Image (cartoon, rainbow, N blue to C red; front, side):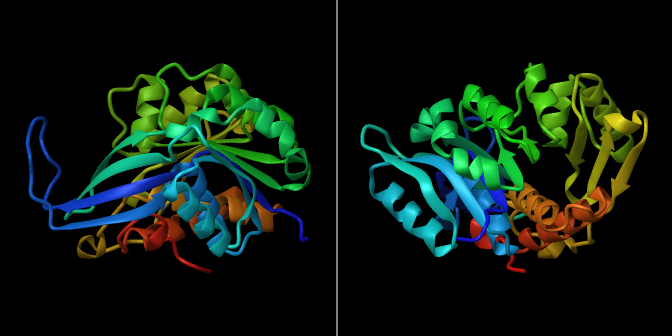
Length: 304
C-alpha cells in the first residue's frame, strides 16, 4: 500500500442541515425551505477535503454502532480513505450536528459529539504505523484534548492544529506542539481575549499574541478577506494572503469552508514540502472559495 500522506486524528459527525431565509433569534421559530443530511465532523471533513485534492489519507476516529455510523464508514471508503482505525462502538451513538444555514450563506451549529468523546491516547498507539509514515498530521478540538496532545507528541512530521471549537484558555502545550496553529477570526478573538477581529490589521495583532503565547506558526483565516500568517522565526512580521473574489450572489453556504481550507492546506504541505507557506495558503483559499458556492459540507468540497 502506498505511503499515507495526510493523517487526520479527529471527529466524525452526521450533519442535519436546515436552510432558512435568515438565522433565528433566541426563542424564535422559523420556517425553513430545505432540509438535508450530510457527513461532517471537522476531522472527517478535513480528511475528505485532502483526499479530494488527491492526497492518500487515513482517519483515526470513533463512530457509534448505529445506522449513521455504518453509513459513514461506507462513505469514507467510497472517498478512498484508509479507515483501518475508524472504530464503531457498541455503547455509543454517532456524533450529530444540527446546522442552520441562512439564504445569505451564514450558519450556526450545535454538536452532540457522542462516540467522538471516546477517542483516546490508546488510539494513537494502535495507529502507530500511520503516525510513523504520514507526512502531515491534522488535529482539531472536537475530541478529547488529552488524546490530541498525545497524537501531537507522537508525530515527527508537519502537524496542523485547527483549534475549533475554540478554547478560551488554550493549553500552552497545544500551541507549542503544533507546527501550524490555524483558527478563524472569531476563534482567534476568543483565544487572545480581543473584542473583535474584523480586518487584516487586527488579525495580525492576534497572530502576534498567539506567537507570544507559544505558537510556532499561526494562520488566521478571514473568510472573503483570505488569511494572515506569521511565524515565531520572524516575530512582528505577518503576511496577508488574499482570497479569490466570489460574487455575493454566488455564496450559498459557508459551512464547510474552513475545513476545505485545512484539508487543502494539508494536501499541499504533504505534496510540496519545499514550497512557500504563502503559496500553500493561497491554494487553500482557492479551494475554500469554491466550496462556499455549493450547498452542504463535504458535498461542497471540490475535486482537484
